[in-house]
Image (tube, rainbow, N blue to C red):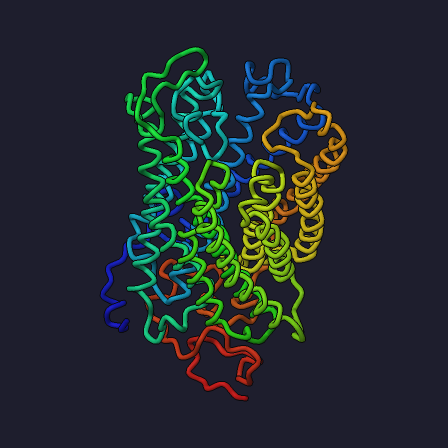
Length: 589
């Protein structure tokens, strides 16, 4: 795109009031920080919910102080009922998947850095950008409101399978108003995500500065762009699915409820619906959502590793092609979540094949990362440690996916803790390690202050060891037949597994407490951290060509001109062993 075209884009004026500057801001950088803050609140709520669940699993009859204040019916005397355990499980999963794993690596970092990395002053549609965050915030408030309605949060899990989620209060506690609020929250969240995805795509395609060809965009920019393309289709399917679920619940329709269904001795007044329709619609969104969470983390980690190695990857273009391939294949594998739904065995094989195929680009990426690191003089920082931790979690969690891709094996493992361990490692923890890496790397640029690297390293090692202690035993439990979503283990074959659960609970409490180190480091560094130089990591991409934090219009009214790809490391230049993207200087051998 020409410089003239970029200059012709009309952007908003600088804010003059506190409300416009810090609350209803049109500045993509402020909006990125707002997304990050919302994800931070959501992740700590989700962590506390996981603590409550783990404590209950090991000591099911022990009162938990203060829990009865949250729900007298769900925790009379502080002792959690089985139904309330399922309610907390539902809210934990929903908060983590939607408001943490989607918000933090994609919406937060993407909003802040994508325009800067392509040389733009702001997003293509700043008002849509502001609307996207505040609609997300409304969705978050609607979901949290489910804690405070009379029947409490829903018990249907974060997947909200019909007919449990579709028939109303007859199906159990929380399935009245609480379930309706859940569906409404996700419907609203989908609207926000669609607005954000459109904005990311338009910004990337239309607002690149002079010289910023697609091949010169950083890998993390490519990751956010590919993720937005995935999100545009995925949330466009989940949004009407949630609307149909709400209509089944409040308008008497029968999209997901079959005829003749009797629940709690009540014949349901519905006919003609299909519970499997919800599964198809949800998982058509659900598996791409895995990559909406993990692809931005892949891009962030690649960007940080290249900087830390001080040399390019073996092929950063192959990394980009692999991310494209993953995005394309992500829409062909949703059926592997439904192997136990009565699916035709031929259909199971059809879905099993692309499920195995999608591991090929992921494997190629992993080999490129490892091959590039081999022999390099890696700069060890908190950011690079979390980037390496991402690789470990991604590989360890991904290997178990080979088992689940086989229908005959998945039928045994599907409803067990094996699946819980798999997706927590490959989707949850890996993505969060990417968020931590991005936080330690970009915090100086976002705030103008350095984080304490020693505390960051301590945070990494405690988190790295703790997460392995939590989620690797889940695979053993699954192989032993431990069914997930049980609130107590009273069967003879489950009683010997209680010591493993006790170990996991202690590890979860320990790992959660370790996150307080990060929170302290984040807040203390924000206000009292050492001043950050403009380019503390000697990085080459455009965000490091400006002061820290960046000015309102990013580049001070001047549009940079790009001369190089973003990974000119290991070269001779006037700046050292790297060459900035906007430097007209030619790299020396």
